[in-house]
Amino acid sequence: MKRRLLGLLVVACLVLAYRGTGNYLRYLSADLRSTLPMAVAREGEHFVVQAVDLEAAPFHGWGQPDRPQPGDRVLEIYDHNGAGGPVRGLFDYGRYIKPINVREPWTLVVSRPCTDGAYERFAVKMPPSVRLRWTPAEWLANLAIDFYLPFLAAMAGLLIALVRPRDDQACLAALLFMALGVTMGPGVSQFPPVLREMSLFVEVTGSHFLPYLVFLFFLRFPTRSPVDQHVPWLNAVFLAVTLAAWGASLVWDFSKHVSFAAASRVDATLSAAGLTVGALESVFTALGALMILVALVSVVLNARRAASADERRRLRIIAVGAVAGLLPAAILLALATARVKVPIGVWVVGIPLIGLFPLSFAYAVVRHRVFGIRLILRRGLKYALVSRGFLVAEAAVIFLALLWVAGSLFSWLGPQPGVAAASAG
Image 1 (spheres, rainbow, N blue to C red):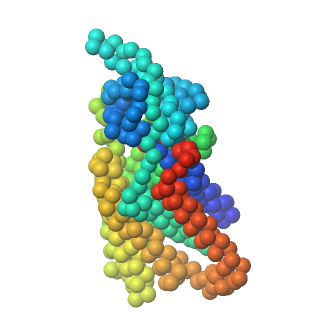
Image 2 (cartoon, rainbow, N blue to C red; image 1 turned 135 degrees about the vertical axis):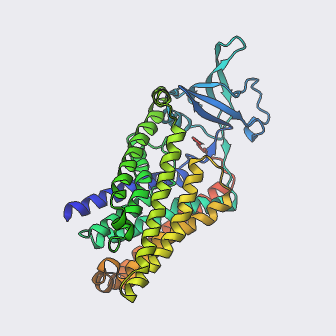
Image 3 (cartoon, helix red, strand yellow; image 1 turned 30 degrees about the vertical axis):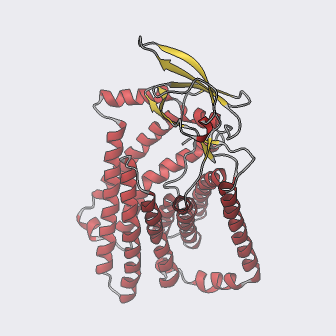
């Protein structure tokens, strides 16, 4: 039991380290508060300029004649102090653009295609980066993605893990919510070394195991569903698909973050087999959505055939929350994988709906004694919540959270004389 609890706590710490670092960089530090006036993407072994925003404020009055052009290959990046180096992968790119700010120019070394098919090396003096400005709708969407959903999922997972670490279904539910806490997380290319590799592993693992954990939990909660009874081999098939998708994604994501050359070799290997990364992502995403749909069918069937009125009430609450929360999650996941640009209003509505899943589950746990949780609520939380020490700690946490968000809001909306770093995009 101690080892299982320790393992769950380690997972929780990894999730909080990943989300906490991303939120710190995005809201509190000088990093990730501006963006470069151009778009880049990987093409084979190279990072290639796709578009340049010549109407961006930093280009106004910029006296340098050279500009980056679509088709330029990014070779090296140097900040205003001359620090930087060759861009071999996304980790290099994120590290080198991190010090770029809204005040000092920087240097972009590119290889530009010529009319004869050759490439010519250019050192382009670049203007400062563009300060990010969010609309109120973007603020709502970003705060929901960065704080609301991860906090609800992590708290639900920790509550279940701490109270019932010996229960197999409770531990599975805890892992499920912790995996939900890392979905739609930030990019890790600008994270500190070691933490960025660890965070990339956590993000890939959580996002790929989430559909299977949802499927496995509802397949046998609170008892074996009719789906599991009639199609018992489905679990093994979905597990094999999940492991294959996880392994392939680990290879692909670490390849492009460490070396574009390695990512190009992965592309070539897949191409020799008649496959592409995009095709594999589409297949794995479709199967992940199928797992979620099967899970929803299972929980609805279990709710309908529950023996007692109390059990039906518990399962109906969980079923409603699961359907209302997981269906938007599956749809947004599919749209993101298909590279469809989702309107900001969809995110503003969709993220709160996804949060209904951990909210309804936590309510069922606390109010209707799911997993038999009762004494902890009557004797533990009841007295802790009214104790003076807990109230003081709670007030301190709320004050710091409000200070965090308010300080970030004012620093983003108001003019700043200080430095703001460039985002990796």
